[in-house]
Image (cartoon, rainbow, N blue to C red; front, side, top):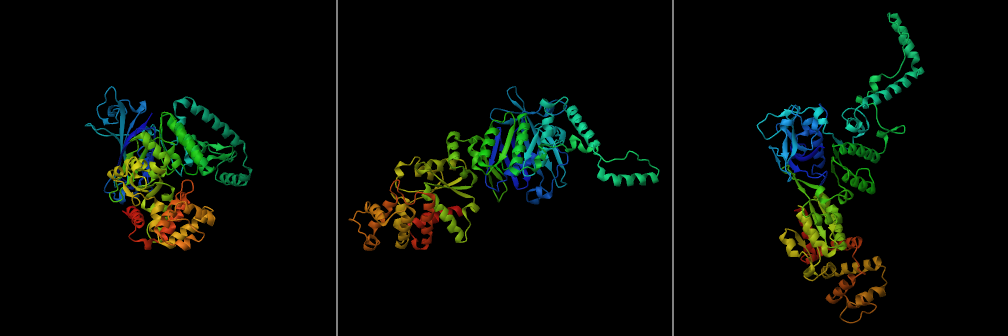
Length: 568
């Protein structure tokens, strides 16, 4: 049944303009917190609202400019047969081909499309019409027909989803073919039985008042011999929403937030299975990671309906295919929301999404060669705060572990996804990189690395003042639990100017050969001093402690370059 294949939004809340095509049954909108993901869901909710009195306010207009009307247009395929008759919108059907292109001439091989437009002008009165590109007057689509598209949204305010009231998802389930027919008869009979039981309740604690009313009425000539208190049948009418789901005797609306969201998702996806559209904002709210992953897997197997969700959770996007993801980026100056489907190079990109999903929630990404560089970026983030500068998250920037020599491939793929990308890396094995650093540069990826043939450890021990080197030695002894003899032996194995004595630090002092030996000892395979994020962070803290003393050094240029790129 109904699926949205295209949406266009103008002048709605934080969106000046937005256009996007959808090709999947599960659509996941991702992006930073200011990218208008929720607004897109609210726009869909508004245009497919089954209510006649959907309220709009001045604050719903982009920059509160009511002179520029709100326009929301969506095109849907798999339309209910009831809407395709000539008396409804059969003469307004359009076509979509296999590539997703919409045209006004419906061919034998094309799928039928219905395009709906919601307009709100300065009067705040919304109008809904079915439109085409042909020379036809738009035709109004009323709330009852919009309700046949079965679109509902799960958000923080979802208690109505547990009521059987008209316009709610449970009521839509009641009206599907599976439950059609004698549904009203069975429901009414159950409610009548409940009414009989209520009538048997004497409400004795109200008798004093009702007796007084009986006496007063008699004085005015009205006999109320059978006066009593009970429930008016109209107050438990199913259409008014007084009947709701309970867990035992506890209403669903009183369950915990996570349980309520799961129950609401269950209801809405049941609607979607029959051809509805479920909108879920912040899918992961109130849920444990394992439950989030299970829900996403079940949504993928949902059936014939469509589910459109937003998320900031890595658990969500790692369970989806890259073709299900739509990355939104907001231009804060123009108000344009730029979107990009992440289905390009699907197999390759999916691996990157699973390896470092946090990259796809940022506008800028620093791909670090390994854990040491990630730790240094953490220290850089803290240093920026201490210096009164914005931290990386405020600049919409994330840093991710590129997992060694695959960092160039990951950086390239993240850049191909439309995200500004930089690489922070060594220069000791450049000839082994595939793709090479030159390929990254040609793809507009900034490279922040070490001097030729240097690892980050070599650059650090080369550029830092001797006081900082001594701090690194003390930290290595503590963090790696090294005795003085063990430390001396590991450094001695890399020292080319003789054998180190017990007092080797004091005896030799600050020499290029000793610095090189320390760098070599610190990066011995499986005995590295800083090859862990927390160790890399401590390394970074010592670097920034002496940052003013390494002006003109490559290490300073590299880290300052990263910081400047974040601000650019």
